Image (cartoon, rainbow, N blue to C red; front, side, top):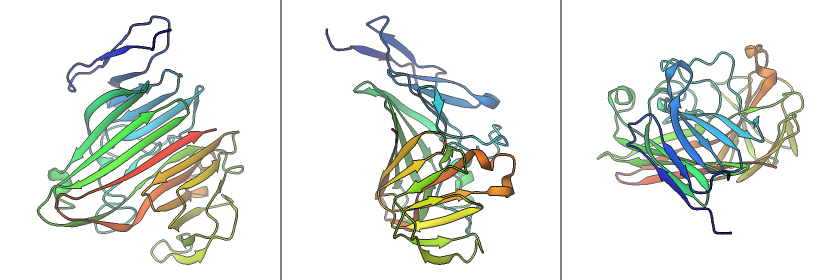
Length: 302
């Protein structure tokens, strides 16, 4: 049979919808559709020809859903607000240009701003969207630099991939820290992460402002209570058992560190239903004018 030929007819990026044309009716095809989500916030829905699906809110460029075989592997907290005023609590929020506390607001401003849709495409049957963020009055009030951030999302049968690129468009050098604050749906009592043995740790549980240095000695790390720990120079692949029957590979390029977090009783409403396994860059990335930095993440369910 001839190869699947698919034409994507995309109206201008300011339009509310992407149209799709399948030249082989009855066969599955990839699609990207722009629509309204909760709170009437703009949302992009990616659907692979295999039936997997991902949802991306342009506010904060936050991925709020990743479904494989109709099962959502990400978690959005029940207290999440979709009003464009506060970051979306759950899914995969951005921490940029600051991870954690510091001179600007907690976790930076990337998750508090509206990103813009740049393009959609189909590569080997996989839907791909790219969004961007540029400096503006809101960001410059906190961090007075010109920058350009691109975030590309690719959806395959069992893999959700992201590529995050930051370019210095200023006349002065700048530095930043960043992370993808990924919330995985989980049973916290059965969830575990492997691959971290031997890493240097910064345990923030005793005192968040003065982490305790240590070394991970466990082959398998669990979530027995409140967990907030940074793993420096983490390997480029971790394995998450979400305690719900799913094994998820978390691969990365250039995300040098990892963070495990679960709020336990400080978030009694939902802590039992998720764990955070975050790819991060805890040490500062220094960029000269016109320089760029890129980091890639691949989430794959077995």
